[in-house]
Length: 318
Image (tube, rainbow, N blue to C red; front, side):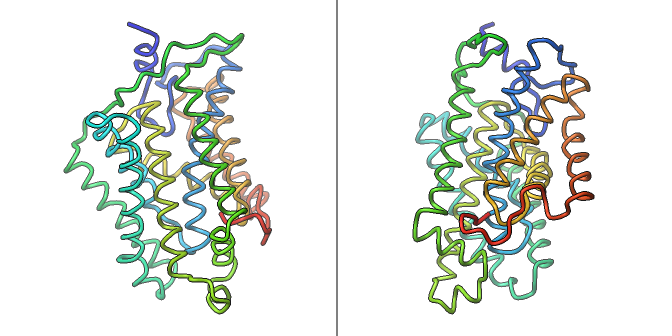
């Protein structure tokens, strides 16, 4: 079996479990640096997912629990379409379909109940999550799926080993986050999104097309969820539990990042990713999510507004 096959054998369908999973304790030594690298990959994918979640939370004012199922939907569509059309066309179509589904859900499900408040929106999102979950099982079944994409032969770079595919995934995640930041801070659309996030009513009075901006936000959030789900699937496996197993980590990263600062969300995601993977040096890897929530509880006790919360800064929108 080749290097890529060996990496595949170590995969487990656990939350944000990349290519070194399972329940086997990780040895110390060179694996300290290896865990740091894997933590950066984990954190970067978590950042992509959480940026979309936070963008919707700060503009539509509710916790979109179905965000995790949009991640799973994107991954399932991509794993099927890429087998038929190739990697790039399959991924592009999958992200577009999920973005469109997000816009439709926002317009048809959430906008009508928005006047009833955040709790109704929250429970609507929970209901939608279960509906998507059931549809995924009905359409795709419960078997584990794997992208037919080779990560490549691992490169030994001193104390770490990194495959070209893993480096590409890290670069893609970084480019997505950079692109989102530039959109929010260097474009007219970004200014409109920030205005809606700051004060929806005032933005509407000042002539911001709030409804149109809301549609764009739904599309962006859903597309980011799809991208995160696809990248996770490429590095690991695609299962119907992908959405549920990752939404809690997304929530944790969003809370740690605080409101009003997209850079805070990214930083919190990276911190969680690195700490979770570093914890594998001393505890069983099945406890990685527990580590994330221990950190979350500690932060909520000491700094309830989040580690990186910044009020009303110009460059924020998520």
